[in-house]
Amino acid sequence: MHSLGAILPVGRKTAWKVAFGVVCLCGWPDVSGADDAPLVTGFQQRLVAFQPETQDYAGAIFVQDRTTLQTLNAARELVEQNRYSEAVRFLSAIIESSEDFWYQPSTEEPVYRSVKSEAQRLIGALPREGRQSYELQFGAQAKQLLKKAVEKGDIAGVAEVSRRFFHTQASYEATHLLGIYHQQRGQPLAAALCFRRLRQTPAAQSTY
Image 1 (cartoon, rainbow, N blue to C red):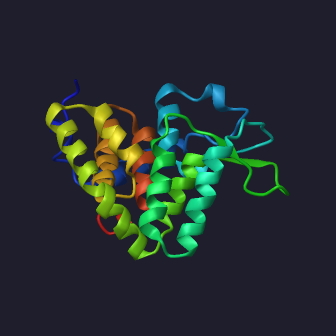
Image 2 (cartoon, rainbow, N blue to C red):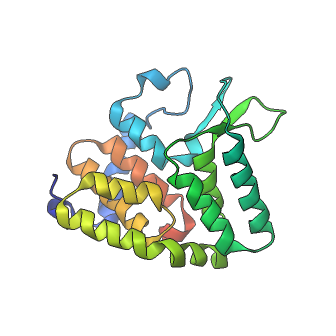
């Protein structure tokens, strides 16, 4: 198990500035192209889950799952009806699934998107009432899992909270801890990916 104790004293702004400075010198890792996918390193592959905006692949063919697409469409309809409590349960079920699938948002463009990344995007795009419903249903579970992971020094457990419950307050904290963890272990690009995701999430910007 990894100890998380050493990463806690680092300030949020300091962590972001250090990682951002390295990225300015080295550039962002390219994880968006299908042709480059085999060249992505192991930790970058795992961090693709933290980058929903990069999970679009043009010119590729992927197997689509009809049931998952139906669940995604049902969630969209519930959001349009302002039935947020039901919608977030549908979207969470997609995120919690052991497999990810791909769909084509527009038949006019040869671009495929991860269903899980779309579910995450939809949760993040919910109005305040919808995000509060998500926090109410999943925030306590995320907080409990994060607490256990930190107490055990289990960095994989912290990563799981970030992946499964990103749009909860506990998951924002988990993502920040992951960023500091990578930064202090000589992985500034991986750290920057975590910090960038927080910076690009309106609900997390005021804190991180």
